[in-house]
Image (tube, rainbow, N blue to C red; front, side):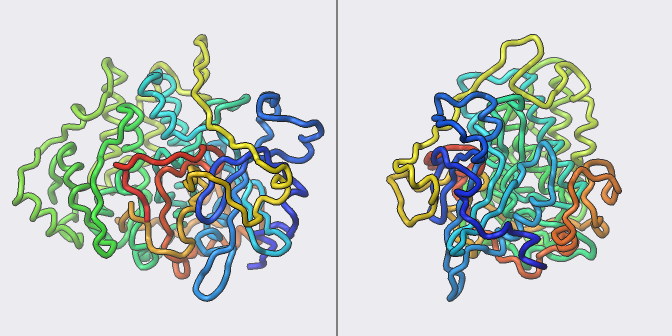
Length: 488
């Protein structure tokens, strides 16, 4: 692969973008809000910027050089993987990677993403005081599924779906638009089946981790994403996480007893009759031991644990979420099937902009605070070795800047599940079946060719980031809740 297919010509970031302020900072980099220089013909501050100006905003993630073995590197394999995938993904509900810049001295790497004002985690937290309407909830759910369907149609598993990695635009004509973000753990899956645990033993944040991962399956499919989406939908409805287990880190073992306990209490105890093949999974004996210690319900109590509401619409919603949380990944609903579910065919109908319900007052949420640059010179030299008194937490779905680029696996994750589909197509499709000749992406010959061959053989274990990270395009730096587990 030629380097030019992945990276822009080495140049100063300041040749193209003006930095407006800092979104967040982590150990290994900083995220800034920025605008293109051609939009900076007049001096603008955050109070003077119009909605049209906001449409031109970007999030610039600056990654500093890190130690990888004996070498100082700025481009880790995990970062390469994310860039390769995002450069080929063009969809309204997937964050767009606009530019990749290496500074002339090769001491930092800058990734330029869409800017968004919120992540879904913050919206859910704010909804505890300002409840979301059914229209807004349904529109969020519909957009999330559209983004997931696009990924899966193009043979990509996200492997870290959670509210912190779902951005929400809060300004301009796209208010309320959802964008899936943080593809650092995403993988292209293929045939023949390969045990993905050979590369990353631990994937998916604990509270959103599918049961096949917890039971140590060696192979897994896109069904792990759909389990996580079911957990996210329940969280939107409850304004709280559904399965809140305490993680025990024992040599990164996939089995997490407390997480399984939380799942079994709500969904009932799985059996070989309800989950074909579970008795062959490596950690099945641990489940048997758990049943000797306490009794679990034999039927699902999901309707008691999740606030589905009342009326016919709530019955349909309950059915949809239940099918996302099937134990057996072979029977778990797909994104395509979920989008065709009757829940989305009844009023209120979902739209692409969740904040602006027809014939209703638009809703607004508190936006992140952008920290002004203390020295205007920093706007043209973002990585200068200085560090101001931030809290050190990078709340950004594309940031992952508190994690070692080639470090140990994240603390909040686990292993694999079931089979894999046939060979993925050579071209990314915008919809329909994989392999469709339709595409909404500009071809990039060099990058596209390389995407035919996944990087499983060489990619290191993805490091963890505090869950407080949310969008690279968005959220401000804040400390996370002490109760929530973190990736290591």
